[in-house]
Image 1 (cartoon, rainbow, N blue to C red):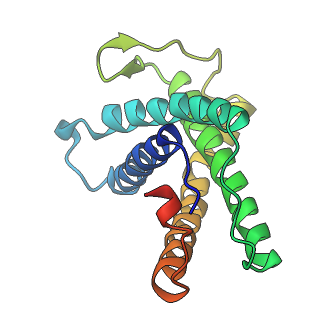
Image 2: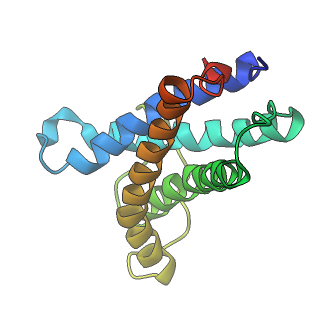
Length: 170
């Protein structure tokens, strides 16, 4: 069995936890009390996901992942590659769209209240702000669906096919 590197596995699981937590916070933020500080936490986690994504892309470009099993059908390999590319796109676009939206507002953007994060030079009525807002509301639904597909596929490989696909990342 070939496995991902320790760094790749750590980035995968840390980011998985952060992304799932942020999806939950994003979907539930209106139902939660304002004094819980959900949105500052959501924004800080989003910025963290964005920074870790850049690290992950650099790592991925400099370290080959293990090959998928030879017995895996071509369509499954293609689906896995397309899904992973979509994850990378979402890990960039969703946090960036949130950053752009926040930049159009009057409140400061901070990272876990430790320091201010610079804002983009955008206004509330800018086309980019509007696109960011729409993207930030719609893409998390796609992300959630892809996550369910990804988790389901990993469990299928582990529980049904009994191959090493999941073990490569654990």
